[in-house]
Length: 55
Image (tube, rainbow, N blue to C red; front, top):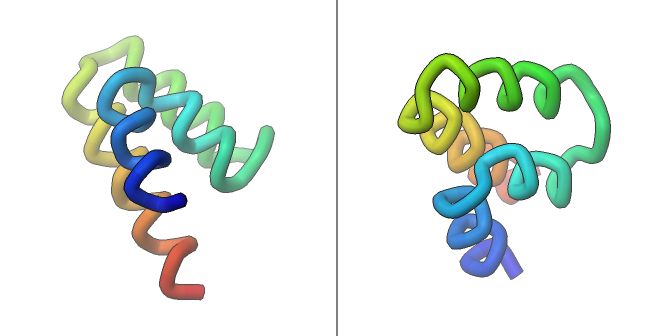
């Protein structure tokens, strides 16, 4: 499932974060990062998905 989330995070970073953590602070931060620059949003989304996979 994580491969699918990472692919979604590359296409729509906030959706990947939402599917991983729901509507929490990380989701809102990712929306802000995606608005400020698409690449920071992708990096943050992949990091959140990878971090929650190891927990």
